[in-house]
Length: 245
Image (tube, rainbow, N blue to C red; front, side):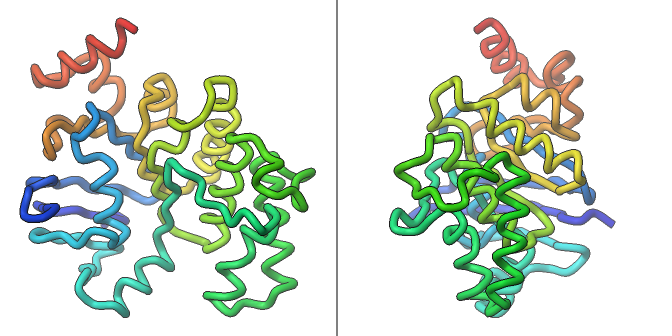
């Protein structure tokens, strides 16, 4: 049974379709990367999965159970199991790195502060920030702030992590430190959906790649096939352009 299964999913903004007939499945520990031109629906798909944009049709199953996006209790339970990291870090500027990571587990989950703090220190150390527990966001580089955001998401103990263009706002020299943190999570078996323009990284890390255009999944398969032997003309055109640059 897939860990996550999406069946004929559709979504719209103000009645304008933005996702059409999205169908794919993800096994536990797999990394699915979403690639494609801007406006193709990649980030929108992540927003639908986490419940920020309700679908208008189709189904999503998590471990075989259908998710009712119209039910607030179901949505709360879903967000215990999925977490998302956005392009913008959205850290609390008046809190240290450690406080940013501990606030949700202690305030929302009502977990013991001391236990959460120890876990947060472990997570920050894991993403290479063992010496930045007491640093405020304006004392951190963009790459460091993004790694705090990843640690913050992991503090909620998600089963699936959604990463939405987490390197696109960074200076080029800071990208690798964030990608290294993601590589570590992959090695530990975290199931992930990744929206990224870092094609070398996508090819290296992904179990499967979905090429999206115009709100559709045009082609879905192993990275070697998508990049080296795409079957669809639209995919071939996109891949040929990105690999030339």
